[in-house]
Amino acid sequence: MKKFDPNAAAAEDSGIFGLPYTVEQAQLIIIPVPWEATTSYGGGTAMAPQAIFDASKQVDLFDFELGNFYEAGIAMLENPAEISVWNHTAKQEAAKIIKAAGIINTAELKNSLQRVNELSVKINDYVYQQTQRWLSQGKCVGILGGDHSSPFGAVQAFLEHYPEMGILHFDAHADLRSAYEGFEFSHASIMNNIINKTALKKLVQVGIRDFCEEEIIFIQEHSSRITPFYDSVLTDRKLQGQTWDEVCEEIIHSLPKQVYISFDIDGLDPRFCPHTGTPVPGGLDLKEAWYLIKKVGLSGRKIIGFDLNEVSLGSTKLPENPDPYSEWDANVGARLLYKLCGWALNSRLA
Image (cartoon, rainbow, N blue to C red):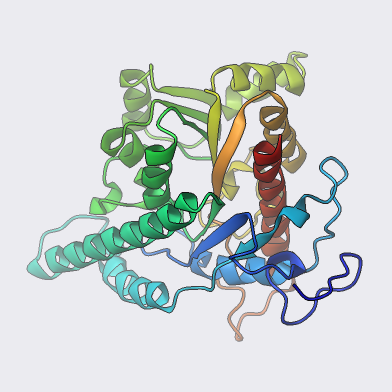
């Protein structure tokens, strides 16, 4: 490895966070998934992996709580060209279905839906194969989307290595809709698919504040596997004098010993992610999210992996619509990603 000064500015040819590690040297591998075919409101999440990579070089490496954890090695794979092609094709087909509100009443729409679902399966297989590859080499793995459908294949792979794991899910949405708008692997259906298509034993949801009746019924019907911590309930408890530390203790108590973190950035207050595809008022402060992740890491549980999704620059990166604030989403995303890397690596070394 070439000489590296962690206190200097990031070199132009450096990796994620300005680090010099190759995927062979790194203990933690980040898999980018520039996919957003089924986004139903705002777009732009497919640009997030590259935008976060660029913004990551402004993150100072020394962490007050974890020190120089980056020395274990963090590397990000190159953005796969084939996914960008699949995403472009799928988005064109999905747009027809979204415009029709998911009502499939013509042969053309039926063919479009079939094509989107086929490409979604290809994405899932790609992510599964990549995750398996690196987990089998003893690496820690993180997924960087893309929309929140991106990590389905990763969860499948993780469950083969960690069958007793649970998911800690940060989100504004429950993501428990069944094939939303007809898309089998919609971003709004990721947790429904995980519950119905895998053997995951525990899903703990935090910050949920936008959901339909179907999803509430689904949660009730799967109460042994799903524990929700609704945003309105969390807010009430804090306003009534309960500390966030006490709330975190209860959340952590619901989790098994092996924890996979699935983080949709819209679980945060929108001031931290103003361009995310489906922003919802309310949500967690960034420091509250960091504190909960830290508490999990210090609880004796092992953070085995993670995904970060729905960071978006919206349409603000288009040349005809510049917005100086568009970098903020990627800035926050990069810092959140670094924290996730830190606590995942800390779990390996503890």
